[in-house]
Image (cartoon, rainbow, N blue to C red):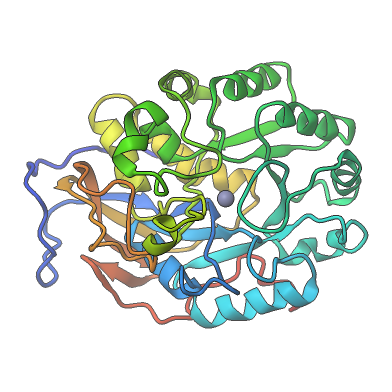
Length: 383
Ligand SMILES: [Zn+2]
């Protein structure tokens, strides 16, 4: 099915005020509920940064109705018991639909594959990251690749030369692999060439690597706040990502909330929040003529759904005022972390209403869904 979207609805500029009442007489742009395949919701163990409730509220405010949550929590999600902790927390509190990744570790090579039906996918941390799941040896990588079901996704935090190692392992097992948050020219060029050679690789890029770089944004953000993994790259890297948009399958936020006191402290943890701003950043690029609306919908809905084998969300859609201009602020942030790297940026296009399975769950800054109304996308699994 080919979807046709009309961008722009005749309303002009101005900073949008919160909606009053139910004035939806204006024809807002209607899009599918978006999917973010890479978020950190910090539960269990980091609830002062984010929870399934606060993180899924942030998702809905950004037009995202399905999130895949990463396993580098405390405890990390590496076995049935830790997975059950996150499953019950999400079942009690999530406001949008979700899936949970299993973290690959040296300890769950034998047991991990049996948990695949309960998981969104298997996540590897192969380069410097936040949390305890860093894998350094080739054997663990290969053995997981050999065992994990071929019809279930593997997602890798792999940078630079590590991407080549991952592609080799995937090729040897005749399976696909998804590379997370690609940020550098050399990386997107390798993935482009691998795709052209017929290798089954997909990749995601984060808005912060498309819209920020180390030369222009490190000083503005400040010493601790610019810390993110992979790091902000150079202007040339940023330009290479845009130039190779055709090879980028997915836009994912890597929403990684930490509090401002942590970011401004002596050991600033890496990560940016991103759920509330990703669609508006991409729509700003559409407004600037850098992308088409179809480019955005394919990378924030169609490709994530296909690559990760995600279920349809019936009667689920978002309505967007494509002409609204708004400024994200630290104070206006829904995420518990309470800040945004885009404070004061002028963004074009704002989510006005979100409908999940026939029920309006977000409208003009107000949430009406109940915590726990989100569903586990692998809910057929026996918990
Ligand atoms: Zn991440």
